[in-house]
Length: 113
Image (cartoon, rainbow, N blue to C red; front, side, top):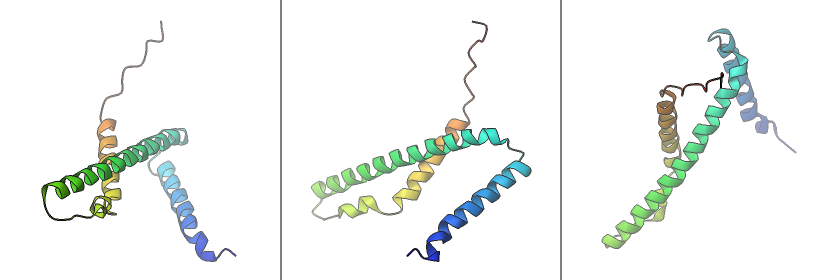
């Protein structure tokens, strides 16, 4: 049987998402049709986070193996997979997404052609 605790996190996510939507609509005057652009941006950032996560773990594994080869000390591969790498990869992705957002939009194609 499913306990009530199972619904706590999803319930909190639904409530905070609905509250954020209400604030975005009423306070920030964001049009609902632009929400799709925000969701696409989120997927772009999540994809970049996964890419950074894979690259960070791979680079960490390479560093561990190089360290093992060059020194007599043993370093566990777990050092490359510390839990802090996930939020740091997210920060890297958000910085790159934000940086890309500052780039001016390319000119629209000429409609007269």
